[in-house]
Image 1 (cartoon, chains in turn purple, yellow):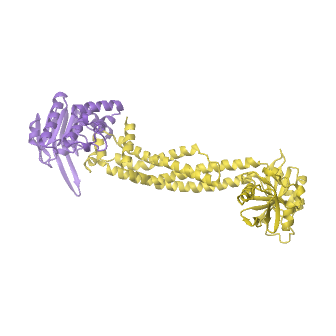
Image 2 (cartoon, rainbow over the protein chains, first blue to last red):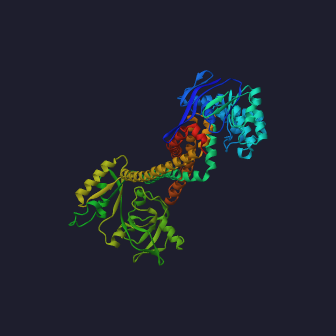
Image 3 (cartoon, rainbow over the protein chains, first blue to last red):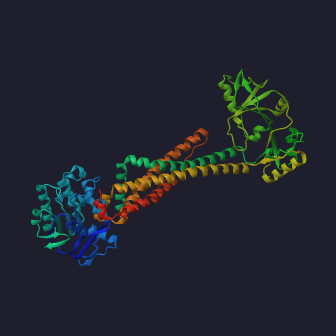
Amino acid sequence: MLELSDIRKSYRIGPTEIEILKGVNLKVVTGELMAIMGPSGCGKSTLMNILGLLDKPTSGTYAIMGTPVTYTDDDNLSRIRNRSIGFVFQQYHLLPRLSALDNVGLPLIYRGEREQEIRTRSLEYLKKVNMHERASHNPTELSGGQQQRVAIARAIAGRPSLILADEPTGALDTKVGQEIMDLFRRLNEEEGITVVIITHDPGIAKQCKRFVYMKDGTIIEQ
Amino acid sequence: MIFRANLKEAVRSLSSAKQRTILALIGIVIGIGSVIAMVSIGKIVQAEVMTQFREMGTDILNISKDPAADAGGASKKRDFLGLKEALSIPAACPSIDQVSPNVNLGGEMSFSGKKLDGLVLLGVTENFPDINKVKVLKGRFISDLDENSHFCVLGNGAYQKLQGLGAGDVIGRTIKVNDLLFTVIGTMDSSTPGGMRTFDPNQTVYIHISTAMRVKNLWDITNITARVRPGASHRTAQAEVKEFFTKNVTANVKISSPEEVIAQMEKQMQMFTLLLGAIGSIALIVGGVGVMNVMLVSVTERRKEIGIRRALGARQNDIMGQFLMESIILSMIGGLFGILVGVGGSYLAAYFAKWQFGVSYMAIFLGVGVSSVVGIFFGFYPARQASRLDPIVALRSN
């Protein structure tokens, strides 16, 4: 499904150039539930941004479904993000002024869906994460775990084939984190969505079908 | 639909920062307000001028001494012309139907010891009401049989002043002009000043022209209002009058026709329009910069939101649309308030100038149109900045 070959990414900070990713090769197969682990600063977030088309590599090729990504067509990158990828962030990243329901509907707005359709679909997905009773609440009125569940509903509302989760349980306690993890596993098993989770929690990684370990900008263990 | 979503979002965003929104609007409100006021007042004045001229008719010439050409005439016995010569104009000029000469006098007027301010004493002939289209309310007007008599007729404003002083039904009462007493024999209906009238007919006390000239020891009349014969052209009439004056009188004459007066008024209106237009454009530019400033702050504050939206699949154009929508809504709110201010301002102007008030729909379209153009123009740069943000940089910012 996803194939990274020799991906490098470097940032220029002042006069020095820092290489974050030093030639990453990775294949993600459809239907996988995969964890990417590693100490902080190893480049796993950068890798996730590249996987999610939020960032572009300095060199190397990235192919989605066999098609290499062209980074010059920004609208196309947006379209792929909108239709094929669902993001879950550590800090949830819900829009504070919108209700849970409207937050879930955001990806559908950018698809040009009709308002009525967006509402029914958003409610349906809130139900899936068991948050439908809080549909009209604003994020500030929800607990961390609840916010993350809304964020997951938002990630899957567009029926993506891939979920990218960056430390999804990082800001939650173990019990709530486990609930979120169960949700990912269910989505993976029941809906067949490919899930890639970035974490530094071995307990989370263990529950995934496969995990890779990163260190110093390269994958050292698959 | 993305349009509806952007609209909702714009309203939400603007109402969450009310204070900033209101401050940004002031410039736009003033700008649009003065543009609207300019257009409305222009329209009102135009309508007003038209009614003034319609009331008195446009077949009128005003004949007076040309004050600009006065300097060289030191040896002249007279300034202008006498009553007899003035009255002979219709006979000499076939295009002139009637003339109504008058003398305009100052003088202190009082009624039972109380001063009457702001009134003009006008010596006229019998046909004055006919040519000037003013109507008698009570009693009768001055007749040519009243030659040298001390009778007077009050304009409506003067009549009301006298009533205010407790004169009751003023006919038969006497008013004092300088040291002379005049008996009131009639009062006039109120009429609109302006147009071809060189005086305010309401604030006038009329006496017979012969009395006026004798009392003041005058040789000359002040002004002649002439009515052009039906079917005759203004131009011929003017030429005939000019010829009459070169033949019979040494003084230089100034003849003004309604067209000239209207043209002059239009010129004044143009100056007024230009002035308000300049104020309006400056305020609009300042207001536009205010909108731009607010939008730039809004973009900076919402970098993270932009990042999230981009991650969820918003295209650059979607982000641009969102912020453009916000700035357009912002300026349009300003525009709406501006319309209120402009219409209100022109209402006040009309009220104090005693003009007939009217709303120009053109002005409202103009207000909405101009404000949305300002929104687009000054919102473009911030919106573009928002859309060009790197998603990853935007997501990381706080």
